[in-house]
Length: 221
Image (cartoon, rainbow, N blue to C red; front, side):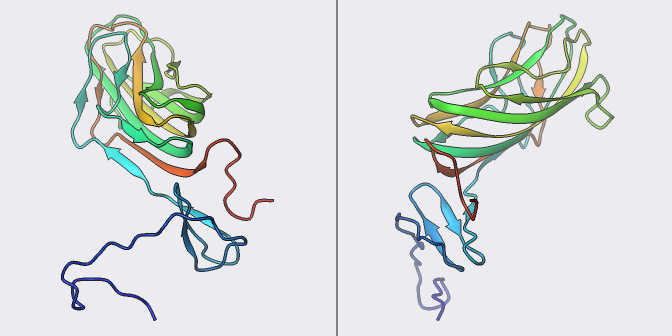
């Protein structure tokens, strides 16, 4: 019979349901929910074990003003704390704009923080125009990056006062020593006017396995 824990069945202060970390069964069994100390897993049918994303998510509910500088800036104003010896998957959507300054510059993306990384890779698409986020972008580019260091991820240099840039990225990162992980952007020169990160920009990240080997979850063989 199912176990029901709630406040309507004689339990006024229900305890949380907690899984103890353990070794995953081999093979996986349909209907299982498991936890290995890093990731939650479910097996919906057969031996097809899958990751249950325990996502850490941050979304801006108001625009965030940046600075008119050529040093790294925090895209969302926050960083996330990651655990040691863990591989994470992530995705993000950023929208950056400015309305002043005509000094030629490009925009790069990267990551800062105190966590040390074994490796990182992400792919994405960027577009920009001089009108608004809601109009068709021009000069859209795709890129694949294998470093946390700042990498130019814009549509060349720009001297326009009004610029609207969008970025969509997806990737994975393998963490060595745990610590903070901070999404950043860097301008190649101070343009004369600061960028603003638009409302609704977000970053999502969740663990998918232990570092040091291929992440193999499911029936891959």
